[in-house]
Image (spheres, rainbow, N blue to C red):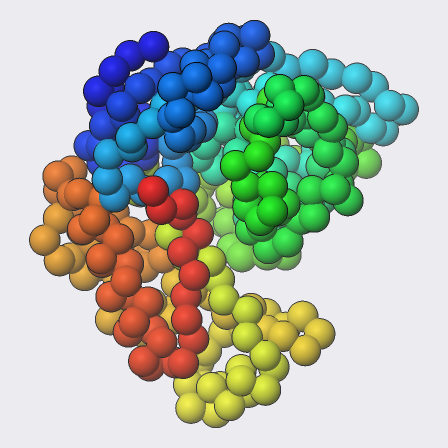
Length: 337
């Protein structure tokens, strides 16, 4: 247990905030001990995984627990399906690479997403036509009140777009210990329709891609558009793509004929990056903070010296300008502390 601990190396924005107490946990038993310590001392709790989806706007006057539970296990279901269970402290991209190395399909479109396995169900991470819910089976959680383990299946998690029970009524009540996915061992379902995957594959002359080739295409796209957090502090996509009514989209489309949209029944999902770019934010810098020059959806700690408040205020200005121009209110995807 460490006191007055700097969290700068533990968040991908590289914001220098301090925790009153900090501990790194490697076992469930140690986790229970840390929870008892926080309860005995009346401390608020914060669980950190890879620190890739959080913005510290102030010091944390409580106990920060970094979950470092490790381990991956495989359970064959039949000749075409395999259950893969990964503990919460496993790095997400390393899990994807582990599965691809064993020719297990289902995670390839989620390559190079930052963070750890334990946070993946919380916001139902997704990219290029795939979301966690598509291959999710269950997760084991620790109930913070009873200190008993529980199992949440697909239905109980109530996944939505970048959403789950863990961000709603279950927020602050559970900590995820491990996650189980159902992957294919052959007859893989290749998804190349979304985004620039097909174009990237065509560049390499690939017509019938393997899951490994799809993964490499996704990695190439992400590396060309998104900054490496190790070099420039960021949390990936800062905002959710807004969903608006079909009526509102049609009215906006008359005025902004180049506006892209992805219909779903009577609603349309609009790319937040496009909206932000149309408001002139792409590459724009104010003080220590900027919108990335290649992807306006990504806010970066441009100088490495930005405070969490500077980044938050910058995001507020973006929200206000998009609302003024399009009448659409963006929602932050990053957790604000």
